[in-house]
Each structure stands twice: as C-alpha cells, then as structure tokens.
Length: 164
Image (cartoon, rainbow, N blue to C red; front, side, top):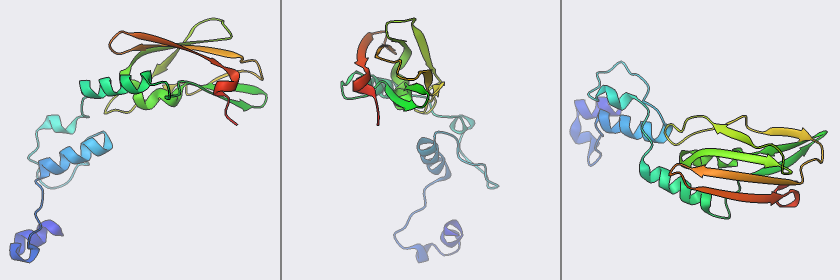
C-alpha cells in the first residue's frame, strides 16, 4: 500500500520516504537472524544477502567479555523430583564466544556441554540440561574455553546455583 501510494502520488506521501528493498532485507535479516521472506516482486539484493549474517569478531569479543564477568551465571540447579537438574544453557546467548564448555559434578568425570552453531548470534545448548539423582549434586566445576583459546574455571556449591 505504501509503495503504491508513493508510485501513484509521491506528493501525497509528504516527507515520508520508503527504504529500498535491499535496506529492508538487510534490516529484516539482522533483526530475525535470517533472510527476508520471499516476495513476488523483483529484488535487487544480491544472493549473498539471502544467507544468514555471519557473526562478527566484535560479537565474539563482546560475548567473551560477558562470560568472563563474575555476575554471568554459568550453571543453575533445580530440583525436579526425584532428580537434580543441572542446566548449563544460561550461557547459550553468549555462545559465539565459547569454543568448549566442560563440567564435572562432585569432582567426578568431566563431561562436555555442546551448543548448536552460533549463526546470527543465536545458539542453544545440546542437551539443554543434565539429570542426576535427587540431592546428589554438591559441587559443580565448569571450565570454559573461549573462542580466543583462553580458559577460565569456576567452582560452584549447591547453595550457590540452586534455584527455588
């Protein structure tokens, strides 16, 4: 409707301007992490604009800085009778800065928390949580290897990460 009014009577639109199709597609992709929906009208944007945007190095650096901040939770624990559920997905919004995440419960075997690829700044934990016998988790040690290769380990007690 806006395009039609602008084409038919530009004076009617006054000071309002209509962005080009390529600008609209770029904005849509950055907001939604993907290409704009296909339309029946002719597009002037190159085929590369249709692919998901790459993650910039500044995004990786920003995610690493957020993860290194002491107030960013790396783990949460909840009780789901009869299990303890360890959730490491709280770092998923910053997964662009993560190369690898490993954890151990009560000093036991080290396990790896994987994430889906960070495409367009979005990722999810695979699996989203880990289950253990009820009231069995006393301590959790998490070692984060950041995208730049540096590592940091945090140790948590049950009381620190238990959510009501």
